[in-house]
Length: 385
Image (cartoon, rainbow, N blue to C red):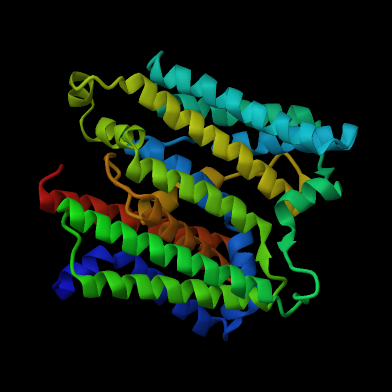
């Protein structure tokens, strides 16, 4: 494989490495402290999760959901209100997720079957659901102290007698198990593709990529072992990411999203109903926004009417930075995860360095613009646009 091809294929991975090293040097090594490495995951959990749903929306033709920050806020508001009045964790979770599901059904129907433009529909939802959240909260901040609820999302995986606060061996064990699983699945998948006659690329490149991934997982597990261990929030993230990665890469249902974004007219002629595809894209997006509301509420320990402001922009930016096409029909879950992590590294690096908020917005806007320009230029070169 030529150097130019490698650089083009792994542009965002290389950018992530360069940016991480840059902020590590700029912050005097504070970026790689165990606590900051753990916080990198916890503070960006909502981005990693909601980016999976946003990818489906973007795949359908470059569409986005502007209402997810408000949906997140409304779900969190309902959960906090139920907890403060009843103390029932299950009821709080059901209320939050129920609201998110209803929002998904509502917006999915309007966009898919009534044919309201996604931008207009979700823009209206952004204002509507934010207002409802403030009504639920009575424009106040509601604290969350329910230990069961907090434990579901903010606790750490520990093994009694084996783990200590700053020396959690279980994190290393879990990391090693994950490495073994990824290695076995990757090698089996490659062997199966070779057997079917698919093009798989060079063995050296595949093994090198696998080795880098395994090494990064082990290093991150080692850093987490130095600060409380593996957070439960990581389990929620992995569950969502793995499910959506499987859906988009290995199911007929997942290929429908790519088909609609690639050529909706041809999709209709092939017997696929685009209305259902749009419905499911926005339904699943709202569902993930509801789950993210629970995670964010538990991490912060309180809910107010401003929770989730601009969160939709982080999810959108993660997708475009991670390689999703602004035209739709192109993008992968692994790619947007790299985009989300890159955005998280930039956010955390700027915060640790102490860069003023106004300049943080400038930097994030510049990164997003650069990613979209790169996509547009690439599409022009390949003749797509």
